[in-house]
Length: 115
Image (cartoon, rainbow, N blue to C red; front, top):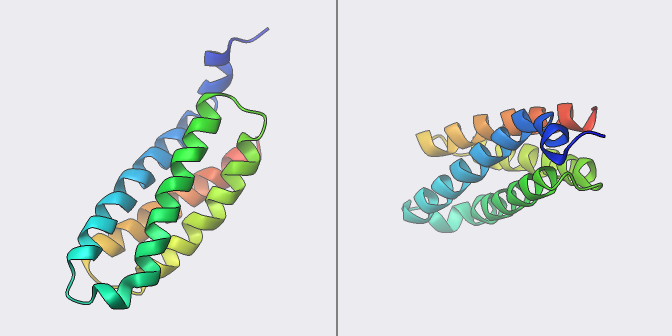
């Protein structure tokens, strides 16, 4: 019988991608709040919070080797793609970086759900 650690190891790339996405979304969130057009970024800012929260939930589910981890990662993939789309609307460096990291996370979540 595999240990939890062994089972979780197969998710490590997705765990790392979700952790990075969580961090970058939080950084972008803080930067967006400081932008002069913060009101115009309201949807983006909300999406950044949601994306960070869902990434955190996905990491928790995978590290617990929870039976619903694939379901949560599928939701995470959807939210990360939506967050990337929102961030792409703004041309500053922090939003462009966040969009790229969100796409990478979505791709890892898609791979994880195929395991």
